[in-house]
Amino acid sequence: MQALLERLRAIVGAPHVLTGGDLTAWEQDWRRRERGRALAVVRPASTQEVAAVVRACAAAGSSIVPQGGNTGLVVGSTPDGSGTQVVLGTTRMAAIRAIDADNLTVTVEAGCILQNLQDAAEKAGFLFPLSLAAEGSCTIGGNLGTNAGGTQVVRYGNARELCLGLEVVTPQGEVWDGLSGLRKDNTGYDLRALFIGSEGTLGIITAATMKLYPLPAAQLTAWAAVPSLDAAVALLGLAHRHLGAGLTGFEVMNRFALGLVARHMPQLRVPFVERDDFPYCVLLENSDSESEEHARARFEALLETALEAGCVADAVVAESLGQARELWHVRENIPLAQAEEGLNIKHDISLPVSRIPAFCAETDALLAQEIAGVRLVNFGHLGDGNLHYNVQAPEQGDPKEFLRTQEARINHLVYEAVARFGGSFSAEHGVGGLKVDELAHYKPPAALAMMRAIKRALDPQNTMNPGRVL
Figure 1 (tube, helix red, strand yellow):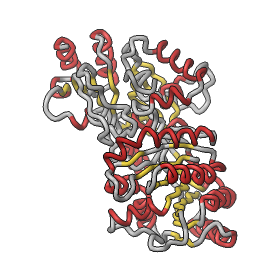
Figure 2: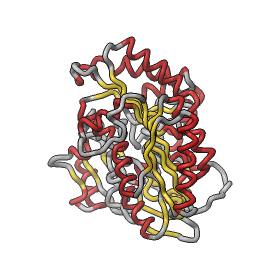
Figure 3: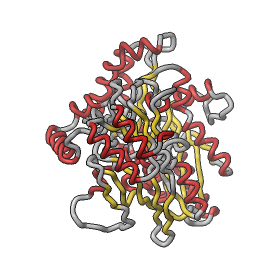
């Protein structure tokens, strides 16, 4: 492998081939569930350097693990323990190549941090709507590789819907320039959609052309206490009817999740947390092109209708962007508060919105019956049917022991229930290395056969992120 390392140094420069010192940032996943050992961490600065690195690794028989911000939650971007894999980090490829104002697109390199793209778009007078908790450190390449979702999917869709074109380095080290800004192109298979969500197993995304939108003239945010999940779903229906395409966010959070934020982050003000007459809260957002006055009138009419219909027990509307950010901070800090409470069992599931109340009622009761004292942290993107249905150890229990002894059993109970209700065990986090067995179990055999055929055809040497997804 020494010859490969020398070749990699010649391609990207010796300072950008890391083989010694503390490589924890690249070798350990964000949740600290697994720690691998890389042959090297290689940080190319251009698409041409990525292609040369891929060719060198393929010739040497060394597999590659593409990595952006390493913020994934399913152990999909860290090396195994063999010490033979090359971690290819994209963070030196962070340029925004071009903004096409008339075409409402931006072309950006894979290593660009999501928040930097949001800021650049806003500076140019546009909105880039992909938004998630890790936006200060996750990268566009990783967002596309996992088909990231986030808080505005209800209006703008996942990362796949926001992408018009890609530049990709294939497992053979060839460069596919598909950076089209076209919204219509019926010329064969949609290769762009194939690479998005493939988690680095089919090639390395090096750049993308993404959609931009006009900045909204008005943005309104409300926090509503609801008497049940059925009421939350009814409120969602009212929001669709009253706000139409203006509905950009609709998040649900159970009382226990909000109680964890209040307990571990007392500096944050959690609305209604002292009350015990409702099990859930909803955070909803309306972005509109009309004036603030007209948008607020429609927004408040929605809440009045919901109060009269019994969908909402109480509600507050943010009076400023600062207050709106404070409400979003509460929602975004639920995962951090849960981590402060101790190790937990995470689920990223999706279901038809209409079936979510029945799923939660049945699965809540099942888990309570099977594991005395279990605590449920249920929150997520109700607007698009995505729940983070997480399970915390009993209050006096040992979180590490709970994770060790109960994770497989709880996963089975939850995923079987998800399947019964017609859902998916992974909504936006992906499969990675953590859920490979679940994919093999729950994906139809015909779908698995097609996926494996695609992998064999594009990556016959199994160079790209082996052991992930399939």
